[in-house]
Image 1 (tube, chains in turn yellow, cyan):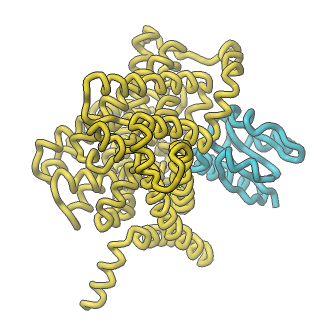
Image 2 (image 1 turned 135 degrees about the horizontal axis):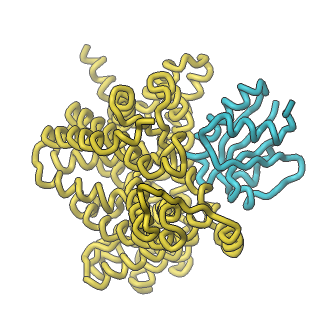
Image 3 (image 1 turned 90 degrees about the horizontal axis):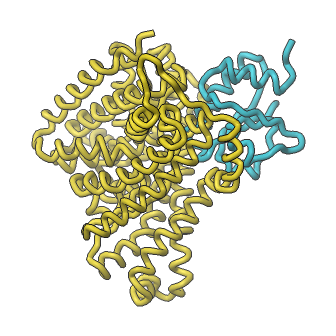
Length: 462
Length: 93
């Protein structure tokens, strides 16, 4: 018995093995052929191991810059990018993070149960976001309440289940009018959609009795053509991440000065070192994402199969780019606004002499800006698209700094980037900070769900 | 067998969702197809028979000889996607 318990303990402490088991269960439930089961499990295990390697590469790229900033100016620099945040958590608490696949599975099952029996009929299917968010809940619940083991597992699963039901339902309230009832947004950027819709309604003088929605016309298409090369650039995430992170990380280096760079670069040439940091960061992202991609390609069909069987007719909540074709030019406008907003936020932090500096991680800016553009545009037109993006960018930085400092992620050098962290999650972190008891937090989550049902259930009635 | 790729920016979320919809569409049409999903950057190195993506990405990818390019703004509705495929492959009875 002791030997079995020991084996169980070892397996439960390795995230890739736990993920393999979760995928195994998913594939068996779908009654897949034995060969497909073997292939799926191998890909899930290898995928997570690739992800771990990517995490190491990613951290190696940004850590020297953060150290330079700390040593030269006494500033804590923090990269606002989900996978950097996830990588940092993976490194900081590896034993606890092994619970993440189980949290994902149970969180998803809670989401399914709530959709099956409750009024909010949404199912969260963006698995890479689920992975990032589940990892974060493990960090947050452990950080604020110091719990481990079964308690951690239960509360994190509840956290995920409630979040994955409430946020898409809230977004659905706004997306239904222009995207129909076939899908809604399932991401940690739901607040970007909510805020932008409200801004759009304000600027577009939205009248609930006589609703008017904006459509892109020939004029927008022509304008879109003028932005053609920018759009092309942004359609290749490797290129855009590399170019912008070279500016961001290289800029950080240059601020610290040549001596500091040379010390970090060791025997390498300091100019080459500075220029290549962005590329190294991108290598980390590309490797990490290829691992995530390999793993979730096995998970998502399993999740979709379970949800189709148990909650037929539920609204699938999917990734952000699904919305971009609904207003392509507005999504570019939103991004440009968000990009500007990030830097406005950054300089506000500099101006007020903040000891913690949020370093724009660009990826969340791009996607959330696109979402802000689409939702802002639909309710308020072009101007609203840009302004929504601008607001989302500023909120990501200024709200993000509150979230990061409260949640202790500032001790890790990286945080999550999406809009929810600068808004709803910042608020939640502030509450968690004073709660002190993990079960009170569990009750709070249940209360959040019930309040959401009260306000949002009417949007799910045909 | 028909080789099909669904393409999105990151090759992770949207293209995977679209892939599952396309899978169902091909099944309903009774056409055997090998369907994969990928990001726009890596798609440059792929030579499928059919590519299904958004209008914006289609402009980046461009028309290619011997490849049928299908664009859709809906990723989840099997009927919409099925009709687009039927039209592109000239399957209308």
